[in-house]
Image (cartoon, rainbow, N blue to C red; front, side, top):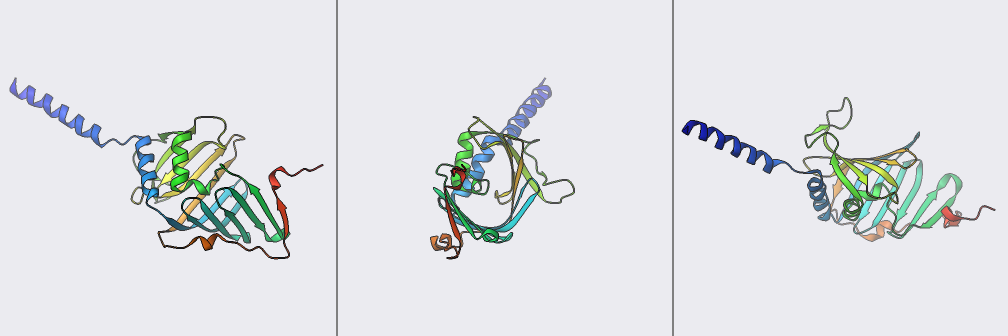
Length: 223
């Protein structure tokens, strides 16, 4: 009887310890958000794939909402976002395009404290397969934790987002977003450097004087 009681107690204790070690997907997302809340600025190599289009460059972010991408592919293209307005310089067309996008979220800006806060509000988190580490992609030796985020309402640009998170640093390695039209957009972040102390002057961009200006280009009258 004593031996049986000890066995039951052992099983109960083991189950309790196991339960304590389980981190829910929502909690894991909160932990990642907490990690980014301690990041004042970061710089990373970024690769963006949208359909058959591939873009490569350097992304800079300064809290709370400054974002800049200097592209090497296509060469000299620049995107600057200050939290309220977006500016894109297209050297091929000698064009500067600006747009008020207050309240909007781009894929690159999701990798920030502010972006993750909005994700937690507007998406439901679940593990893709479980809390265990897995390969970033087939054949890769790089290990990540994968979270699937499903939107709470149809007003979000991405109906589903997969976050691939480095389990050691809790920094986002890859974002995969699927739009309402089923287009897959992927953002890869590598060579991440945090808290270098750069100023907001990095996000001031003076376009070439010869460039043509197009304001509110997303809503221009085409008649």
